[in-house]
Length: 313
Image 1: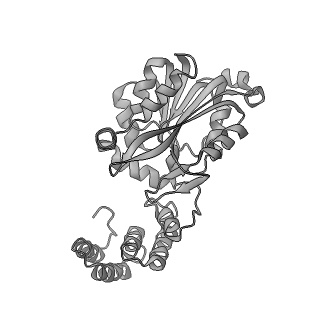
Image 2: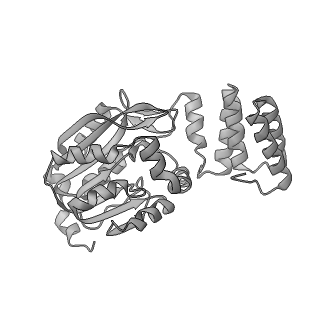
Image 3: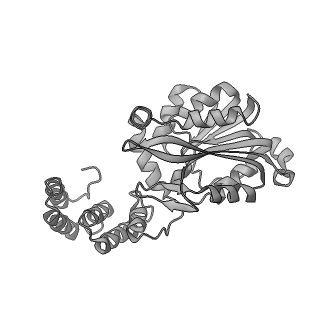
């Protein structure tokens, strides 16, 4: 059992419930797991799993109740119960994913991340971004930031055009994989949804297949705008929605071109290119995406750049 309750009797019941679920007897699985939770009522992972069982049999109300209990017991929500709850309600109440959920997801995923993403999902995010950058500015930059760098797939492409390359990610295990490649000048463990301004500005900030885990992008795009040097560029990919911000069944957010255009205009970007593309597959089907490059920040957005440039890197 991946997340045991700490009570052997409850864990035995939960294991039996999983067996029943595997055999297709969901009524028995729900009954047995409910019994386990009577023994260990403070087990957040158990309540999350019970919600999944209820969801599988179409009992949305019971699923929402169970996921709500999981969130109450562990407000950091490492299992993404809030996302499951909102999908079941068909009302996107959250505007970002819980950092603990994203961190746990990618810590578990790190050892097989590249094999899964590149070989199974035909991941093309770095290719799309590099192609867009090749027609949007200079061939080389002094300082670049790989936002949500993961294992360094994007960084491998940025290294050749960057004098200084930084990467940051929420997952320590993903950062360990990236560090082993020796391509970054600096790596930091940071929550990109809660960054503070400061330090030397960047000529290029890239976020490849990252914003699907954030939802509302006002804060992170505002941070990027504030950290770009005059004339610097911001490049990123998102899954494409028809309009606005949409939470999908995959528990990833998609963003509409109207939302992206308004967001970048509000951030002061004078030149924005939004291109339709496909950056990955999902169950063999292409996921409609957008590749975005924004450049030419207004001078007013870069007030104080000289002061920041004087700070140590």
